[in-house]
Image (tube, rainbow, N blue to C red; front, side, top):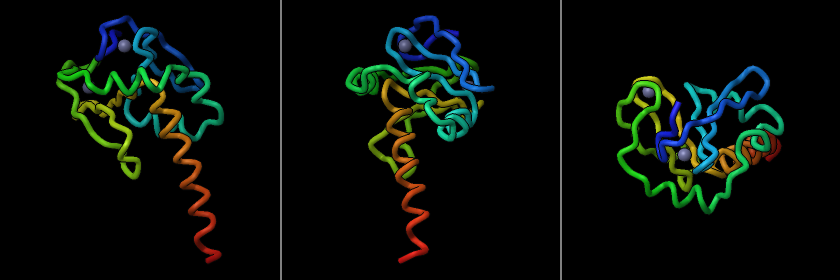
Amino acid sequence: MKCPKCDNVMQKVSVEDIEVDCCGNCEGIWFDLREHDHLKDIRGSEDRIDMGDPAKGDQMNAVRNIHCPRCTVQLVKLFMHDQTHIKYEQCATCGGVFLDAGEFTDFKQMTVAEKVKRVLVPFR
Ligand SMILES: [Zn+2]
Ligand SMILES: [Zn+2]
């Protein structure tokens, strides 16, 4: 499978029973439907799949007209719910998601903070 942003051939990386595709060039990651949601619950998953430079990931946000590596339709640019600084691309057909370098780590860290918030709220 080729990287939707830079056309480099992506490598499969497994974390427990979830297999994602990582780009060794731009260091972006392709997640099939809901895989990023499942992976955020796995401890240390960001150290396995997201080792890219966030500054590079930020630059890759400027790449336009990218297509789904699975169904070739154009990906839609979106903002992460509750984390609007994270821009990502999603396929409206298969639900796959592309995250640039550092974005999964960012997504995951915020999730931990959100969980803490949820635990603390009932005690106010
Ligand atoms: Zn790439
Ligand atoms: Zn697709």
